[in-house]
Amino acid sequence: MNTDEILDFDDLGYALREGRALRPARGYRIRFAQDGLNFRNLDVADPVPLGRQILTAAGRDPQDSYSLFAILPSGDFEDVRLDEPFDLRERGAERFVAFQTDSDFKLTLNDHQLEWGKPAIGGAALYALANIGDDEAVFLEVRGGEDRLIEPADLVDLTAPGIERFITAPKTFEIIVNSRPREVEAQQVKFEQVVQLAFPGPHETNVVFSMMRHGHLEHRFVQHIPDGLEPGVLYVSMEYGTAAHSCCCGCGEEVVTPFTPIDWKMTFDGETVSLNPSIGNWTLACRSHYVIKRGRVIESGPWTDKQVEAERHRDRVAKARFYGVPDPTEPVATAGQVEPPSQAKPGFVGRILRWVSKAGR
Ligand SMILES: [Zn+2]
Image (cartoon, rainbow, N blue to C red; front, side):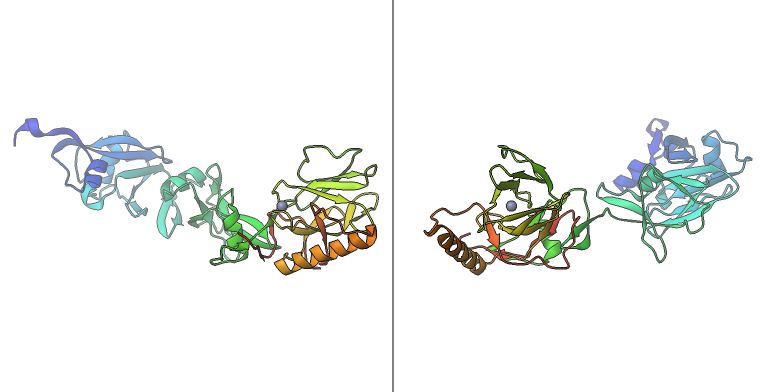
């Protein structure tokens, strides 16, 4: 063989990714890190080095007590002994970690055996070893309990009892849907996802879902109802005998609730405001339906076309009786007759009304 053909070095990582044998070279390039995962390139002269050759190439004295591990393609850590030959190409291990230590801490990550020569491991190291996407996270398995989320910035004490099994799983966040805790996998959740959590499976296109975004309304006594309504605020004008708020589903529509014997009755208990009867926004696209009770927004049942028709009729009759003439104008919002479900709880992040079918969509 012509010596000109001998490379200065062949990179093991390239060879592995290209699925080829190592080429004749003066050195074989691996990645080496000590006491962590800050890998650097390291050239070793032998394609089947001994453990001590790797340490020597890294400028470490093998006489000092080092633990050397190869990180196998599976993610497992394999102990490389000082006098044990390690076939780089055959084992497919590109990364080596050394710890200057007498004791190794064993742990598993997705059932792969890891050995860590320090009493603590950084969350970032676990993420790097797990090689996962942004939508996944590392968790510490807690037997008989809730798995603990490990953040990249965390430092996990490996000497603490029970610290041994780490797993990766999609990141989840707990939200409350229809009073029940549910898990979602990202910090932002889409409307359709929440609908699926509440009512799994396919839905017909004429089914409309609505969602409460505000669990509380803060009352604000004002002289005039302002033009732009701040969401989550119930504006009360005693002067004009009316209240107004931005629809609690978050759709942004203005909901006006006049105080009259046939519309709404407002109760102020000195701290909170209640409105009676319920708010049924059946003229709005969202068709949300809720009760404002002591500042809380409590979802009510859905509006079906039948209920809308009945309510429309009741409203017309009530107004006709009150004014002595039929009221030709359709109110922005009108009263419902459905009592709030007694089990409804406030303080939710998201809440869904049961589905209502909407005609003409
Ligand atoms: Zn709405």
